[in-house]
Length: 257
Image (cartoon, rainbow, N blue to C red):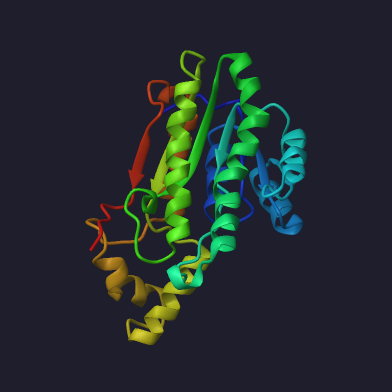
């Protein structure tokens, strides 16, 4: 399928590694001009070089940082708000009001800041794509990391609200409610669990034997970054013109046990 992305300019936040880097790579292969955002200059510039794109450095948790990123990125056709944090070991007893505020600032307000800076130009041009990388925890929260689940519920809500605001403009707003993603931090966490519980000593053994991976979804495996990146590329393309205000669950059939 020709995604018709040649010449489109895309900013991917949190793209120095992991899922963001994979999204940047897939968009670049599809023909987009990619702006790679990150906070670590070395990693961000390396990823940008690998995908043939531009690197922008900045802290989206501050107004000044977001303004710098938006200015250096320039006019973009596609905004992929991927930057975010999570803490799978945190529970209610570990998360005070400051932790909730910090989670909300990074997972929600960083996206809002860039939307304010970049979407007006999309609106004026009559075409654009805004994509939120959220989590299924925003729809099915768990007892752990409650601040993360709540921040992702806000991400899904702002996606639909923005779509309503962009009615008849040619700019769409959609979200992906992601399940588990095999990024380095997730792999490290699961390997620790695997060794502690006797599921294996190598990743191949843990992936095959770990109940949290095998039994938590109908598919029976963890999600790989490429799974999500391909969906982002579709939503970013003109081919997806009839999809807006949508939350697409991509979680392997994960369900609350």
